[in-house]
Image (cartoon, rainbow, N blue to C red; front, side):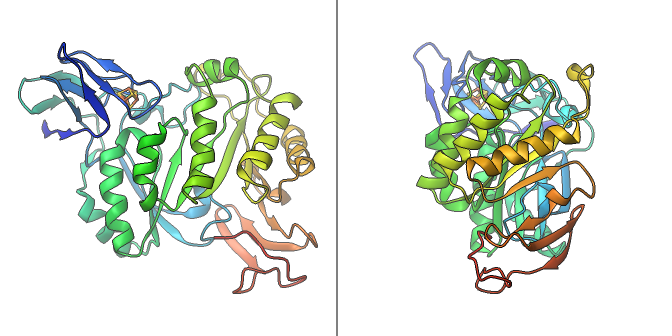
Length: 353
Ligand code: SF4
């Protein structure tokens, strides 16, 4: 299939015909004819193109709780989209069939790429996103399933249109994005659901093959404080890789001190998979220890994920500790917050967007 490519944003043309992509901290220098680390941004005759613009591999109307976002527009549905490629190579990626696919196998010179089309992708122009969201009773649009940063141009255009049509917008991200593109899309992004996968560079290298976690932390801080997005953090806890008190305390303290006590932390259960198939399932006690660490650090909202029916999937009032939002999987039960975002029992202001 021949696919029209879309010129990339955030790159420099270099004298020798190569280009430097400035979208994510890899800052790839890409020779003519080659693609960057993510596999979806390709240099053709000295111009960098996105070869995935408008190409969706997965589209669904999901509950916002599935992202997971628990303190953002609870109970709403969100049109969720993913595409190919990623700028990380997590050895346990649940969506590896799309994220580890490099769609660019060949190209013909000029501005048309020859893309080997893996199954299940469809062309969705940004204008159609709004229609799809409304038709499917969705209050917003989420770029999710794989890393939205590498789909930047499409997400940027789609997010702009979404905001013009009163839809909210969400990035479900690994956070590996440079600050300049983050600032560019920030006016059109409402929520930033970011993974903090570990709390030292060695663990980050092992888990997802990037050199440093610092860019993830810097982007999360910018999203929260510079761009005023709603931020929630997820840590998938993998026994022996990131379940020690030092890393968990490090993440909890980072959230509390650098993002804010109001930022929810989701600690989720790992199930052995792919490269990490020999690791153990996360014991529930480990997740409960992480919850304790989170509250001890001063966080107001710490949630356990991937453990059906666990009491820590509900929202509790940080002051009176009574139940505020009851969850059953991705469904909402009792909702004890009034229209002024206050606990109906004690009047405490609750940090729900
Ligand atoms: S977005 Fe892709 S091409 Fe650009 S720097 Fe990151 S990995 Fe490299």
